[in-house]
Image (cartoon, rainbow, N blue to C red; front, side):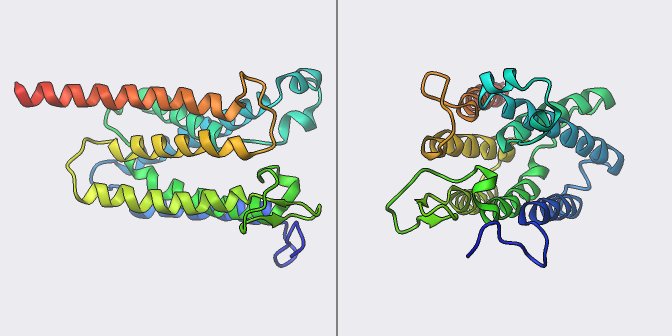
Length: 247
């Protein structure tokens, strides 16, 4: 296979990214809890998520190589290229919470995003894989049977495919937990974020990106902060639930 692998003459990154947004949005509209969230509220939440994700994914990307970003601060092409899923997720979270505050909505909306996010991310990672070296999402050199030559004669970890498999397993586990438990609103999304951020913390050790922050890269630092936040949030919710039970 040659990389990038064009499909019907369309660049794979462009094709799969467009499919990820389109299908992910359609899945959200179809599966969201219509009894819990009115249509107008759901659309404002989506707007907040999209804007927050766009800003977050770009900001975190600039911290991949901060010195290079400083050197190219006045180059629009450099500033506009590249983005990160972790930055998009954390930025989207901030965007959603901001939108909810602006419209006065206080109930959790995160659980409705788990399925569309997972589907969209899996589709998007297919585009990353078929793009090959140009996408910079591959892993380091490996002798594993899973190694893929993206065109430079070196077998590398196909970390994009690892992520697709992990997301599929995570989704199955979360929905099994959902059927067998009576958790609070938002728990599914919180566990999704914990699982994915934990995965990114580990998988980025086998990616050939700069690790300028005490042996960690920008994604891993953001993942650690996100993990700490969700551990705190889940612990807080558990304490509130126990107090309510005893009361």
